[in-house]
Length: 79
Image 1 (cartoon, helix red, strand yellow):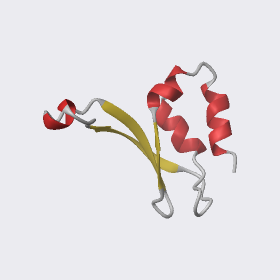
Image 2: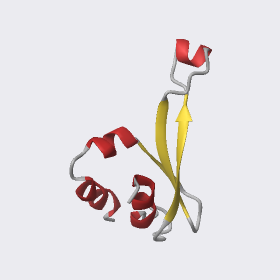
Image 3: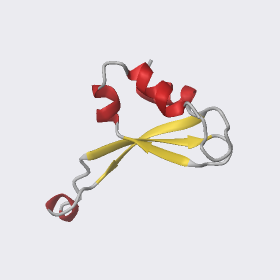
C-alpha cells in the first residue's frame, strides 16, 4: 500500500475527529538560489480532512525512512 493510501486510511482530523482524508504530494521551493531559480526540491504529503478540510503536512522522507512505518502512523493518529 502506498504511503498516501496509508495516511488517508489512518487519518483522524484533529479538529472534527472525522476518520479519513485525501492525501496528495506537493513540492515547494527552498530559500536562496533554489527560490530564485524556482527549483522545487522540497516534497511533502498533505492530508486534508474529508469533512471540514483541515490539513496536515508530513515529510515523506521521515516516514519512508522509518523501518516501522505502521508504528509511526499508529502513534501519529492516536488521539
